[in-house]
Image 1: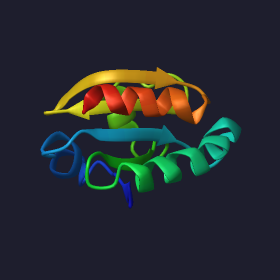
Image 2: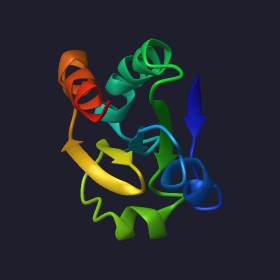
Image 3: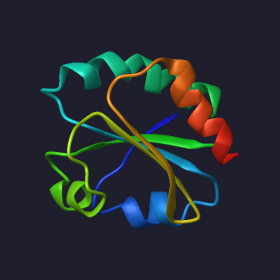
Image 4: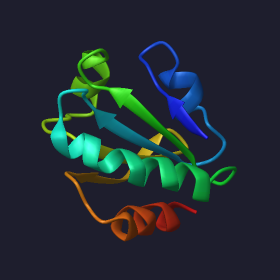
Length: 105
């Protein structure tokens, strides 16, 4: 299951999550973000129950994008126990993103 994160639910869904969370900062106009959509959706299925996978629109949630210093998108953060434990920017192979998730387990 893929989640949709917002400034309203971020603390509860991400920072207070009892399992690690992959946060995908994206925008609707972003070409590389669109390329990564099927990859992120597949990871959401693969890691269901072990890692919470979700997206956050950086245009609609600019305060969170600023808080996490998101300068370019797509940007991926792995958050565990409320702390960023890994991050990456830009389109990448599914294996590279999966490796980040495996390290958080």
